Image 1 (cartoon, rainbow, N blue to C red):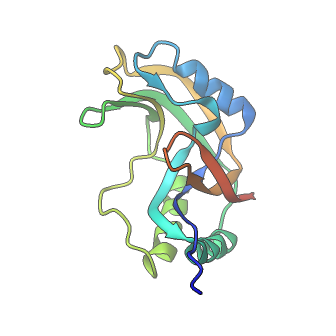
Image 2: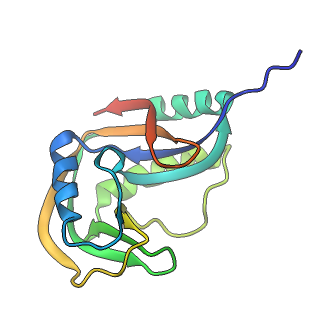
Length: 168
């Protein structure tokens, strides 16, 4: 008898604390569209698509071995992906610490998984099926990032579940 392994769509992300999550939710107020629910707000580091349980176990090992120290991100601008009709919050200036973390993760994942070839655009998706925001700047939101997680999305993509997480 063959046992079918559970498959799920997984990704690595920076996972906000409750205070940052509340501040991100406030950034949604002036936006038009379908708002991302507060419990789903995050900053994706790497999307890995559909993986089985064995792959998820190996991804948990990647998470355990990843060099990760707390970092502070300053989100201060709205961005818009026109093709996807998506509004997001992003960094006004690059973060060397975030670039190092993303690079270290990408290097470890590239040994076994195929990653998207597009450049990394650090952002937190705020609204989908949205129109472009009327302005791009907002008062800076300082996010002290102290948790990285491996997450799975529900089959309908509406909710995320933490598979494993690490704090700094």
